[in-house]
Image 1 (tube, rainbow, N blue to C red):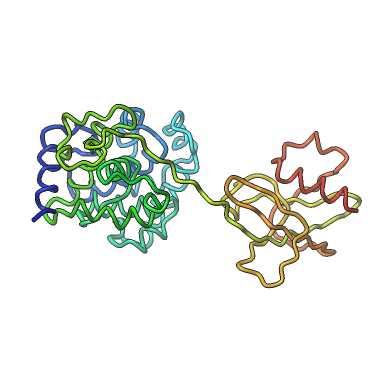
Image 2 (cartoon, rainbow, N blue to C red):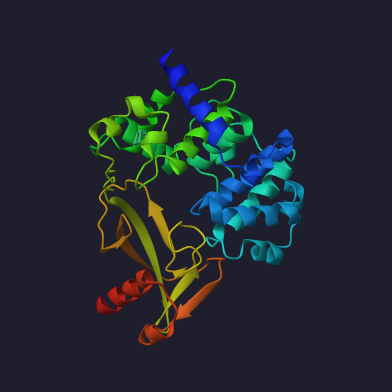
Length: 328
Ligand code: SF4
């Protein structure tokens, strides 16, 4: 009963206050899936107001997934120009191709198949299931997280951990008939009312039971991310005093940059590192192995360490070159 009350309050608020957004238009189920896919890709790292004109232009030029799967790459990038994070649009086309080829031109309606598609992670898969397929799921985006943290007054590190938030979000219950609206209603509540600064509690349907409102404290605690230990074997090929680099299309970091050929090792035993480097919240323990033969099929580049300043290389690669040169 409690669930029902909170769900109804939020849905009632949404029915009156929701923004009219182009991807919320009443359309066929097939279009709804396509609109959700495009809007969710665009909304990753971009504000709603910025996305609207891009979405409209995109749909006008590429009205369905089949057309997207064959759309000219150059024109596609042009349509995305200004939105940034171009890997999103490249993944979007890859996803469209797979959906057309392997899923009969329709987005799969299950979490694991959705997650297997390029550019779709846990959050986007949940959002597509909730919004496009009306599945009773609450996708935990930044807006919903904020409402949840404030509503329950979650301040401790253990409380704001993702796993705990996933558990705590059950407080919002589900709406079996209007799951799609309910997911969007919670997002909308965060975006319009429970804003990062100056939440408009007077207009909030949750204010009666909201603990932050009761405590008159709306500060949000940031989660402290622990550094993650990772292990890599780095292969050094040297010829005529030059080192071999390859273009990275294997690891998520430094994508498309030139790096040494590397392999990631999972929980290696007796790992004897030669150096460690930090990259964002990752501590990379690196073991160096010199190789004589080079038989990689990938495109490769030879660099002269004495001319390091002439190359456009990531700091990570430069640091390794310097390390190798100082340990000859
Ligand atoms: S009452 Fe205020 S703080 Fe609480 S959920 Fe609503 S807007 Fe956020």
